Amino acid sequence: MHVRTLVRGLAATLAVAFALAGGQAAAVPSTTADGALAPRVLTYDASGAAEFKTAVNRGAAIWNESVDGVELRPVAAGQRANIRILADNGWPRALPGALGNGTVYIGRQAVNQGYDTVRISSHELGHILGLPDRKPGPCSSLMSGSTAGTSCKNPYPNAAEKAEVEENFGGALVLPTGAPRNAVIVD
Image 1 (tube, one colour):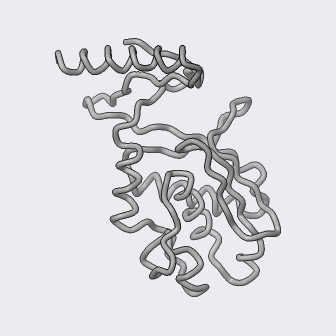
Image 2 (image 1 turned 135 degrees about the horizontal axis):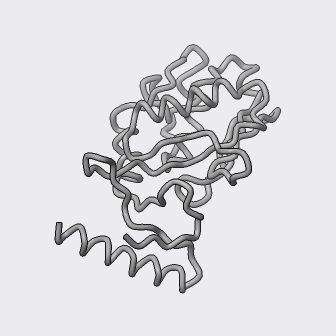
């Protein structure tokens, strides 16, 4: 218990210092009822995903099934999303910002060539979660992307990809639900 109090105090101090330096503040770690660290919740806005909205929702659900350190949720009305998802006529791509933030384009060019929309969605969300392309690669590697070929329908990250996302988010400091993005939360 003493260590948790010390860690929370240090986290709060660092958050205040970061905020004063002009950055966004972090919060003390949230925990679940059993004392485990709660996942970092990232919201996504698929309203611009057009015909790919179902595939985007499935890609987010696959990540939620695959990792514990982060959870992808549709954005609530009136809130700003961490991830914006758009459909366009180009090649699929992600423009990541800070870890867990950015814009994903579900490009129709790849879909028209026969690539699977759920695999594309999972792959591009993987970039937002901090994963790089791993090309060339087999179908068992989600981040191998298009090099696995159009016959590859696997939308699931492999063990190494899951572990990397867990490392990226497993120890993340998170804001409680509903807290403003620049909040400093002190327990």
